[in-house]
Image (cartoon, rainbow, N blue to C red):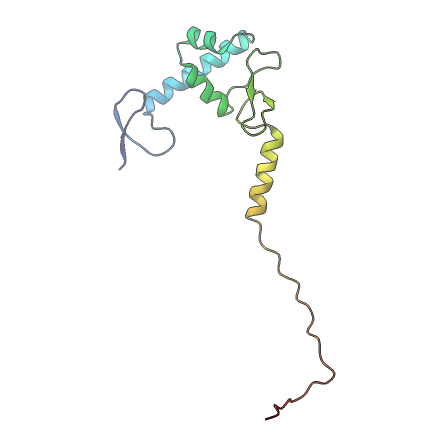
Length: 135
């Protein structure tokens, strides 16, 4: 049994995995997320501070949802994110599609099975036979 304190309310709970948050706080976070999502749909031009104030959540929590790709900005939104690798403008997450593809290819290549080496045919000498050392 792995007991931890909830990072949100401080109560002890049986930690299984993921965020160290108890079940009641997980439900409250999900309700907050749904409220923020609905607010953004109704107010697509709102900035991050206004969204946080009107919904009673922290800007840090909203940024976490964006990085987790749970929230996404619209094309005309005043809020912008930059790819952490190349700096290109993105709407959600941490990396642009090009950088994600590059990283996935690198990971695939790293764990790819090595191809068996092509063995060169053994050359047979025409003078094959026993050799003796001159002493």
